[in-house]
Image 1 (cartoon, rainbow, N blue to C red):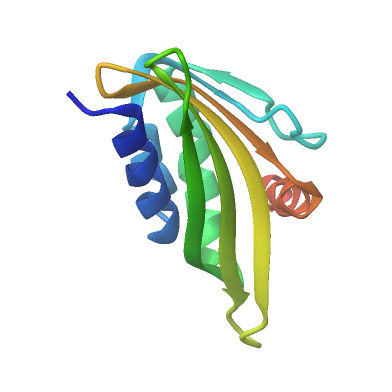
Image 2 (cartoon, rainbow, N blue to C red):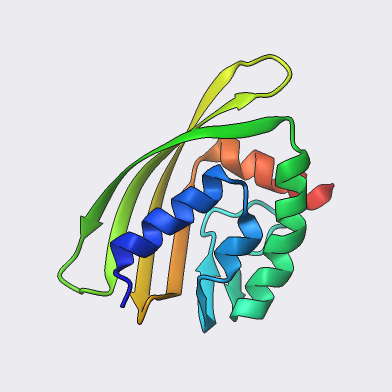
Length: 139
C-alpha cells in the first residue's frame, strides 16, 4: 500500500514533469479536487476522477505551452493524527523560459489518501498562482 507521503511525493514529481494528466490517475474514482481560492471562471470543486481528468488534461496542455517551467519543489509534509491525512507546506520554484527570471510560488496542500489513491486534495495557492490559473482557463 502507498502511504500519503509517497503519494504526495509522486504528485510533486509529476508537477516537475508538467504531467498534470498523470496527477488525475492518482485520484480515487470518486476523489475530490478543491481549489478553495479559485478565481472567477475556474472550478473550485471537482468530484470524480474523470471530472478531474476532464479539467486537468486541457490545463496540462496549456501548462506545457506556457512560457514558464518548474525547476524545483521544496516541501514539508506534516502527518496528522488521522493516518490518511497529510498537510503539505510547498514552495514551487520555476523560471520564465524566455528570460530565465526565477519565481517562487507558495502553497498549502491537504491530502486524504486511502489505499494509495487520493480521495480528497485541497490546494490553497496564492494570488500569482490564481492569476496563472485564470489565464490558463481563459486560453
